[in-house]
Every structure is written in C-alpha cells, then in structure tokens.
Length: 199
Image (cartoon, rainbow, N blue to C red):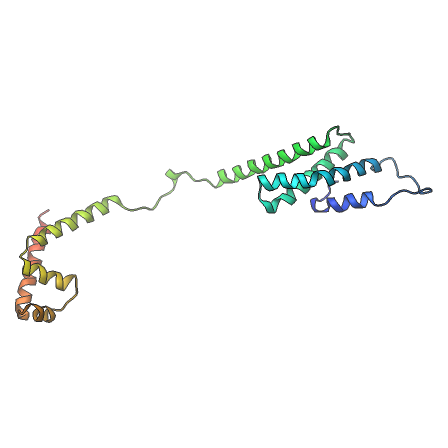
C-alpha cells in the first residue's frame, strides 16, 4: 500500500508515538519493527531540510515540498516492498531525489516536443516584402513626378491633397481665383496620372 505524500510526516509521528510498555502485547511479526520506524523518523528529521534546499535550488520553490514528500514516499515504498535493509539510506534518498528531478525534466521535454510545430508546417504571418518594395517604388515615382511640377502647382496640389485645404482656402492664401486653383490641380493630377501610367 502506498502512503500519500502529504501524510508522510503524520504517518511517521503516529508510528513512533505509541510506545510499548511493560505488559503490552507484542505486535505481530508482519508489522513494522519500532526500530526501523525510529530510524525512518530520524532520517526524515535530518534529511527533510536538506532535500527541501536541494529541490528549492533545482525546481520551482512551490514544488520543493511536494518533491521532498514524494522522495520519502518512494523511500518508504522501497523499504516496505522487499523487506530489505538499505545500508546507506541518505545516499539512497539522494538518488531518489535526483531521479525525481530527472523524471520531471524528461516529462517536461516530452510535453514541449508534443506541442512543437515545425515552422515550415505553419503559415507565418509577416510583412509582404514584395508589396513593401512596390509601395516604396510607387512613392519614389510620385515624389519624383511632384518634383517635376512647377513650385506653385506643387504647393497647391500638396495643400489640397496632403494638408486638406479647400479650393477657396487655397485661393485666399495664394491670391488666385478658385478657377485658377482648379487649373493647377488639374495640371498636377494629369501630370501624376501620366507618370504613373508610363511604368
């Protein structure tokens, strides 16, 4: 029977606390000998703080206590399963702790590999380089076409299309009539259209 990890300290205390006194019946032969329980309690008292520090350095601090309890549970299972005496219990307990961490690392690796998706199987969204190059080329062509316009026509076109001024506002600022502003706008749009069509 396996002892739940959270109950190991309580089990050890309950096994140690009832002492035999003169006249008490002896326990059956298949029960744990009091000397081995005392040895296990001593081992727990001396090794539990060391295991906690060991696990706290190598795993998440919140898991250190659970790992320490699991180590002792496995130790108790190993000693009870074969009714064998472990000659170096500290070393055996340390090996259990190391194996627990190794098993946990293998499990984490297997989970990570199970969730892994190769990059060539996944459609990765990113900037469309061809579209970016075409947009930059178009912008350069528009800029060059605007530079070939006369300064007054260019200023009127930019004031309307970029700055958002109306024809009447531009007319007031430049001293032209609204018809004059329309003529400059038509000239600029025709020039840009011609340049953009002649790819």
